[in-house]
Image (cartoon, rainbow, N blue to C red):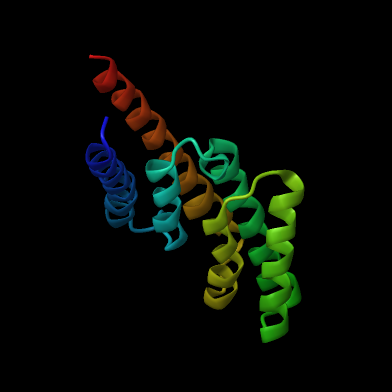
Length: 150
């Protein structure tokens, strides 16, 4: 597949993943399924799917680990300029130490702390959203493989 088609295919995959999350978010009023870092996640998952940073383990656990740190600070430590900095630094270190580095997830502590999220945020949107993006990514990769081989 040439670069133009790969770029179009990546854009379609990103649109599908975010579309599924945004539509579901709009239809289920009591559940949040989308957050800004997922936009950057789709760049990696659909644009450079073979990158180590775009692998399912990195996407899912990178988001979960950094979100946990953000919620922990929000709920138990407090939000100040200093704790925003410390939480972000801890999130980066935690992803590197666990080999789950996913750059978009680096925004999670800031997002979570600045909006005062609770523990439920780890389930939705973080876990559910990351899993949906990974599943749509796998589907698109399989479809791309089918198109290339035919």
